[in-house]
Image 1 (cartoon, helix red, strand yellow):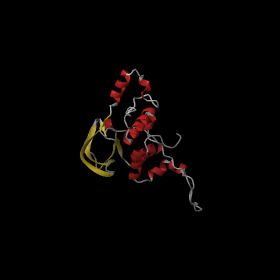
Image 2: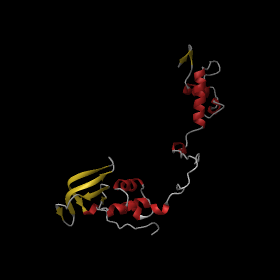
Image 3: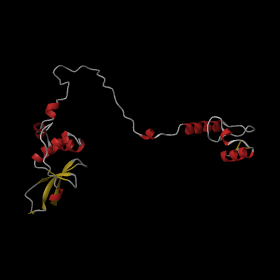
Image 4: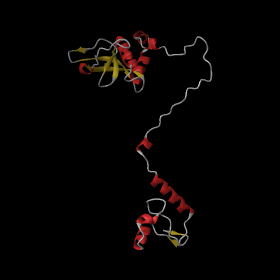
Length: 198
């Protein structure tokens, strides 16, 4: 490589030259274990080369660790800047939220939200129980809730075929599916426990 009309050997050429002069490889760079990209004593180093040398040393001495790729957990401190007016609740009404009667009074959209976004929680179980009480049926393969619009046209021991209303969780809306075959093997029919702690 040429810089300011001077020929500067590459790091590999520097190693070769130094090994021919019987210098140990470890002595090529006093500050690290890697070969120095700086020119030899009779050549001038440009500021760009010095900067690159420092960056290479930093990268060599501090390699990335597996934890560097993990997402950091942000925790925001709870800072109360205002006072809560008298009569307002200061604690979550846990007993009310854990009651199946509370879920029975909610709109279907709220129940779908709890079912799809509270996975693995008691809220998901209670929402599913409330949806089943409102005659919605869960299709395990499609992961979608269906409700009959009318009596199915065909009913046998393996499936039923008819017109259904279903909740599309991708577009977050209720849609109609005509002439749909609901196979009973995909029907979720697990008996759900009732209240918290049972």
